[in-house]
Image 1 (cartoon, rainbow, N blue to C red):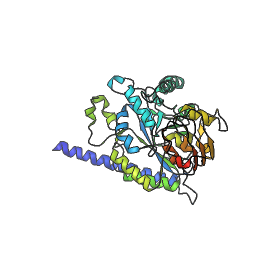
Image 2 (image 1 turned 30 degrees about the vertical axis):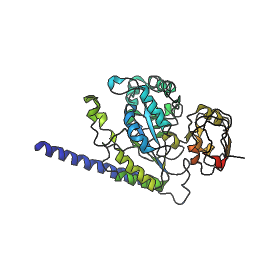
Image 3 (image 1 turned 90 degrees about the vertical axis):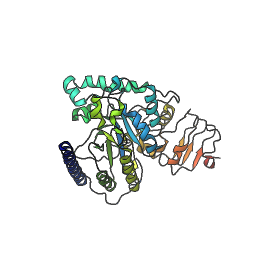
Image 4 (image 1 turned 180 degrees about the vertical axis):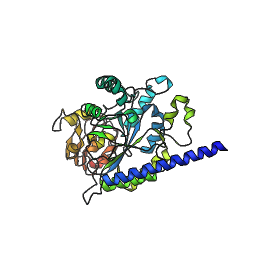
Length: 393
């Protein structure tokens, strides 16, 4: 009986301090992010406020895929998955081909695969002991190489080169941020700072707010933050780890006592769904971290190569979404393109030539509301009827 009373008291105290934390956080965000008076806030990637879900630690890929794939949909609710090369438990083995396939399939649904450190070292601690250069050589560069070598076992698709980075354990210093951004990444994500919302085309350090169960026990606090996001015209990044229903027992995974701390960092599909529904009610957009950073990315290297031929600086490190959004006519005929990922950033596109390529999926064209003239003849789509009403004469 005494044990139950102590446990209940501990839970009440924990709930009290969590609520105190969220109330103070919301108050601070309100003060530092005033309402926008008038002004258009309706253009995705440019000025439409929204949210980004940022998930850490790719040993959790099974639950990201199992509970997130259908929940998020196809280029609907987008998320950033911050990946390493290995499973934190199970002997710290490297990711299996099945896990790599799942990561690439999430990418094919519009999600971002971002950099989370080759060995998931706490950057602040590591650099304090060994220095910045060894950290970059052992944590940053090797993961770029590993990612470049991964390929889907059936589709042949590869992972994109990461644009953003998430500090493991959110451990960072300002000098570390300046060392890797923008040389290696457009944006690097940590956790709480004095100003928790992010403007578009963001460079350098980006704050995030953790919504795992260990820190959040009532989604109503997140809804309060979403209201501020909407009114301020900015964006919020929510940090998460595992997606797991509350009834799933972490101990059932068999990763023993060493994994218990990791098991506390989880968010339920129910909580995620409530946040998604609230964001949609407010007409907020869903972004990846790289999209908030203003960077356009492409799955198909032939697509990216063709786009680079059209922009003002073909050798620019990051392709600007803003620049692509200004283009009204685009000729991509005969470029050996098989995947249209990235076409969604051409927000003002009216005329598009995709003839003589290997495209079988044209669904992303639905994202282009101004598009009225499309030529998609001679592609992999057998009947080419998906856009027959818009095919140029």
